[in-house]
Length: 476
Image 1 (tube, one colour):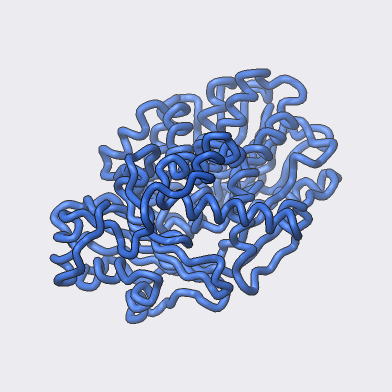
Image 2 (cartoon, one colour; image 1 turned 135 degrees about the vertical axis):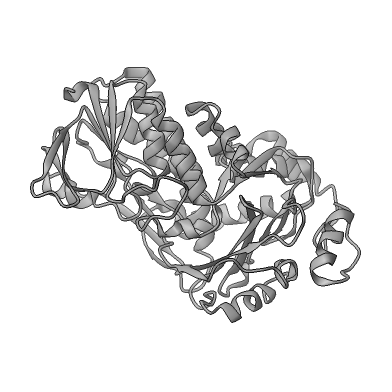
């Protein structure tokens, strides 16, 4: 294939797979290059250590993925993934208290990351225009500061590198992307980078669901970021195979334990012991897996004045977030959507790469602000940034408004409807400034605060089977 009819995607994870699908509609062939050897069934691979932890596919990303890959959501559900309606099928203890379970307006897809990656890749490869070069290392970009013409790669065990010519190269290599170094070698100006690092660490263990049906709500117990102490959190979600995955996390000074004997005791010391009660007698199916690659980091490639033609960066290569906010997968989908829209508008015309990079910058801006602005509240959060919205009075003002919305959304269905659209990346952050939302904030909450998790009678009975009697539930 000539370069104009061929595209190369570096990295075969979610962002890379979605980018390949978008490109396959505009070129004759797409090659995905990844240094890992992809499994032939849902399984772990070395280059994706975060796959051990809980992953949430929020509705804002799930809808985009379904548009790019019609039918893939049904395939996930058929393979054992779960859909939880938000907030109806969720028990959320946020920084501000327990969330009332108003009628659902959004949803979350939960399954193991291995199943999600494998299902999306399998679906993508059925297009017939996408091929995979796995077990292959990317050495450098080909071209110059004005235009990238391809990449030089070397397969595992090969003596000599191979040059892949391409009309467009997409960097989707994730948090560890070497794109900065590749661009420096081409004499492209340095990229501006912002960093917000709470030092948050993760620990995860998988359990057999202690119920006959794995239908218990998703449970999220979050720290109060206003407390000025290390934040400690827990997320319990159902995955395929009648299993539950529990991910514990803690910011610098409050990290979760790696010892199995201390895993559930950590969960019991959180702001609610609900998760520990649920899993007290559940059968663990794995050991404890940890991770520390969790900083919020944004590279402003869209600000490089002379961005080279033929090159696009998306996903975690551009902006990586603290995973506690579950925005990574959906942000990757929004990046792929930005690529798809620009391709639909201009095809591989001159100026495409810069246009896509600007659109990607817009796509990651909301999740960047949502994560970074809240993480700045934790003690010993380390920063290296120039974003004026995250310093001084501007940051204090935005946090005051965010706290007001967060508190009101627990008890007012109208505010919650607007807030959950933002947190699931289904609507932009500035939609919270709509007149109807401001009016709802001014009139006051419609429901009283909850002092206990809003369990239904059925859920209380499920909990009783694992832990004995509990207090009567509050109305959901």
